[in-house]
Length: 412
Length: 115
Image (cartoon, rainbow over all chains, first blue to last red; front, top):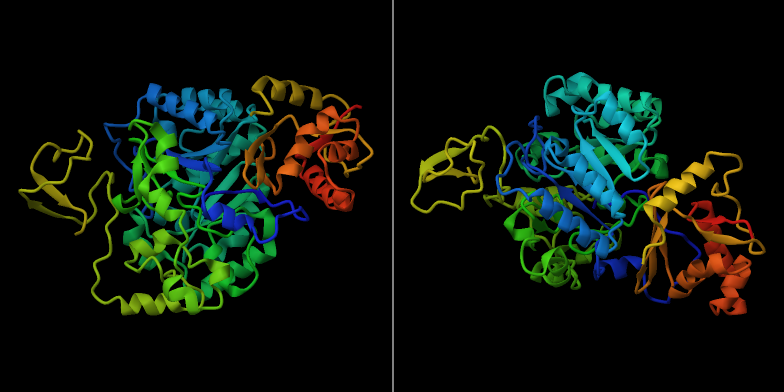
């Protein structure tokens, strides 16, 4: 999920038989928070990018459309939005939209690679109560980080954090996607965050976007997952996780957070062209609920779309039903299953009891779903073939292939 | 229903930086006067309410409608206990509600006010 800083105030009178988790699984009238990818444009090309970002989509929501959407968020009392991308600060109206949101009581937390955090921007951010910043870093050393995020990106992120700290901004987030190569650096990440009086945020690597191509090599091994779990238990509330490791609850004690899949129930994703997906890790037609440009807007998509209605219906534990831990892990992450070609009513590919590994081995020659759309600046290893039935043109006009009947086959 | 406006918050943090910060967390005392923290928004839900603190960026769940009514009335009642009684909390449950308000005070969702 994507929700951070959760406190369930205990010892409260709760009507018998109604757990909060059950309420949430049935969905709320408005999301608690949502992720809004403002643009697919990005100056980096991280190998695990969830949204396959790179090139701007020419159909991006306009400034006025973005403001109308913020008005809707305000009416729905969505407390805050997690703005991401791409690199959201690339949009020329980025600050205008941030100001508009906070003036309309919609808090903003935005994710950035730090490349545009100038000393002036840092000062401006430090003065706002309603804006939070999340700096992405995927290695506690340049070697580990730059291998995933690109040359020089470690230095860029550190410079951005230096500037935020110098401007007096404390409590910003240092956001790390846990991989096979950085899982041994958790203490080092914590030390960096502490040095800047920032808060460490660890999230799960998902096989979504370009991550689908790199998940096999990057996702933590079974032994590493156990280390990660123990580390998270030891650090409790002092480390944020966006509630993303609930599949680890099968080890025993649940981690802090809601521990449920909130996709389409309490969270969702709005992409740069206004498409609404169940969650940020599921950018695929299969999880597309609608578009904010449609009649009825975002509110109608959230409340009435067929997909979200389905997700809010009781889910079958399927193959996980016979496992004594289903109540803890709820079958894990829907997107992780989908993009690894596993059935949605079966174990998570990283099931801590090993059922996922068995399922991956047993899946045979199943073609795994390809992330779509792909906005990567340079196409991945793709088969380019002339095709009479071409897909809708979702590429940017900068793409030399745009407008021609050439099919860049995302299924390789 | 929004509990806070941007101008409220600006005023609040301006004042808070002066002398004795009235919005700093204190242990809950039912005999004292309380209010929703000016930087907290409440969103009523069927199970109670969501409370979001824009300063600490923490989210809390109020797990009953009665607790929501208590929290909403804090500012108009002379004490926390009065707020509970006015919202119709039965005597047998007063201790539970005091504990809930204690948790909210500890996370700075509610704060003391000058009576």
